[in-house]
Length: 532
Image (cartoon, rainbow, N blue to C red; front, side, top):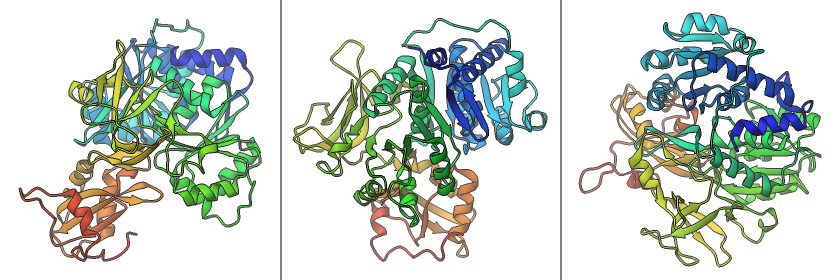
């Protein structure tokens, strides 16, 4: 079933029900569906054709939700982009997927404009926000037909709604995820993939139209994006917030809106458990909590269960290439500590050797995933697609090789062991060390640098850099500030360790493994001061 059809169906069943709450804006399902129609008409009128790519470069706002469904209704392929993405990476994505349009916010228009100027091709831009007209005049290059988001909705009123004929196998979205080369790869998800993944997850979460879900996770992050997709599928209510920086305000909102579902990541769990003023049962309507990105430490699980008695806690594991892989039934938290559970409904998860042969319980191997939720492949990257996907025994079946090492116990429950490659998994995002190193090498005063992940109970892995200074006066805060100006926030190193040299293999190559080991010795200098 095509993505936007779920919005149409929910609007038909519950037209007056609140679909979205975003700040002061509340949209009923009827209003949400109508705005989707209007923007889809405007996109088609501007020249968008079925199958063309549209970047949704926005934060958690109602306009982003409308844009995602409108692109789908127009027959296009949407690509949600993290709002912290810098212009050079955005330009690469625009060129890579040959985007036809960009939908963004006034505050992001400068970055979008720089990227558009660097990658000629897109000729449609729609800007939302109170300063949209000024942002268009100031930032969008000539040759790009730019519209105010509100004006686009007005222009799309009253015309026939586009309804291109789309199949389950047609491409619905591209989600860019970083690879080991540092260049983002576009994960291709068809309408059928999204349908299968959202159906499976809503089944084990036992979602209903009565659910009210609070989402502070970026909708450019697939964990946050699927809160929107699943909520619309079920006809539930989704509350969009932009951050968890002020938890007490979020909790007040949750109590006021009677929130039943809370997706979180370990950093949020840690913040909650550090708040000494909270009493057990402080969120009386909450029915379930989900966690992914990194495993919750056992102490965090115990703390959350004490604070949220009677609330189901779902520990999960997934990756962008198939959305979700496993879930741990809440009743097995005590029996299977440290496990990420079993395959989600309708799919398979198994541990294999290098040749793809299943391994017995207790053996460590790569986790393989099979099911209708597995991606089509990587956009315009057949080599990477061939490396990640293997043919399955059924006609047309794709087996996804996750790149993660696992073991299974005698009952089939899975346990994460580590990663096969150098990619750092921090805050649920993939961080390619080479991309961070390129930025570090451009920092004045840095002679050499190597980046690796170190275990972190909250982040999963913390991005850490070992740096050789060319300028002895260089401080940790200088390096981190440079990184913050040039990298997305989740890629910025948590710590910089200065050293007189970098460890190398016998062939002279810098070794990440040896660099990580140096932190346990006295070889590395201590940082001169904490980052400010």
